[in-house]
Amino acid sequence: MSIPQFRKILLVIIAVDIVWFVAGIALDHKLPPELVTYKVAAEAARASEGLWYHLISLVEFVLVVCWFANLIGLYKLRRKSRLRFLIIQIALLSLYVFAGPAVAHPLVAFLNDISELGHGLLLALIIWSPIATHFEASPEETPSAA
Image (cartoon, rainbow, N blue to C red; front, side, top):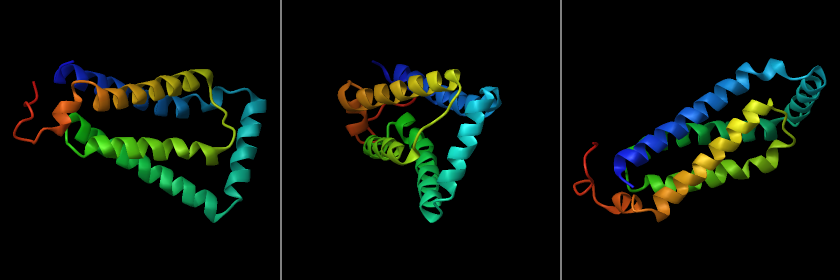
């Protein structure tokens, strides 16, 4: 796999993540009334947990910001971005334990599944594919963007 192909895959995964986020906001009102009622009640129950809920939300927000910032390092084939991506991905996935039941529109759930598959693909590419050697090279040895 070439560097331009890797970068195209990375950009497609970022696009899917953005579409997933926007669809989650846009399609929230399309849920059946019973699910909307449940979702509001579940969010209120989690928010009533107080500091713990806000701490988890803050950690999740910081990790998502770090994740997007680290994508720039992946695009530029920065050496430490591989390890950061792995650590951030594990940390984000571990937060599912604290999330509780989730309610989402079927399209949003589908986009989330595609997004997670893309993240797994990225991990495989940056660890086991020939692209991994470009992350290990010094900046002088890394080919320029082409």
